Every structure is written in structure tokens, then in C-alpha cells.
Length: 138
Ligand SMILES: [Zn+2]
Image (cartoon, rainbow, N blue to C red; front, top):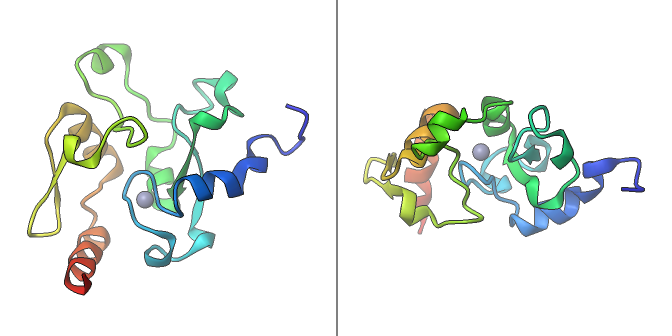
């Protein structure tokens, strides 16, 4: 890529394609401390997949907390073969992997959902409280 900024040059495109929503906890920027709290995530970590560092389809929009928890995590091949991997909502739907409980918590339906819920702590108290609040608003 000619652009010296590398993947950072795609920031606005990634943001738009993800509709200003975290690819993991699914909170929109407005509910998650705004744009300043969001960043580009490498779905496949760039430390493990350096050739994908500037690959557009590896760039996801994520809130800071999800991105920080995800860090360089990636399942070992043995785990991935059993289905333990990050849920990729660009490739599948929320409903395939999760159930939204009345408590505001997400329940895993698949091994990928279990893996993702656990690593990214997707039932963080703040997320659960916001889901309940948003449900009340709608
Ligand atoms: Zn998030």
C-alpha cells in the first residue's frame, strides 16, 4: 500500500461499514462514550497475521474495551477445529450465536459464542445495564 498511514487510512471507511458500532459488544458509539472510545481492530491479530495488517477485510470497528480485551488473542488450531473461535458477525448473525435474555445478558448458543463471551466479557455489567436501558427505550 502506498499510503504511509497503512490501515489507519481506512478509519472512516471501517467506521461507516460497521455503522459506528462495535463489532463485538454491538454498542453504537453514542452509547459507548463516543468516537474517541472507538478504534480499528484487526480481527486476525496483526502480531500473528502480519500480512493482514493492512487488509481491509481484516479491519473491524471496536470499542476500546473490547479491543483491549481481545488484544492478540486467537484460538490455537486445536481449539478452532472444535469451533472455539471469535464470532465473526460479518459472516454470521447474532441470532445464530447468541440469545438475548430478559436479564440483559447474552447466552451462548455455539462454541464460538462461548469463546467470544468469555474472552471479551460480553456480559460486562455496563453492557448488561445498557441493554436493559435500551430495551426499555424501544
Ligand atoms: Zn465493544
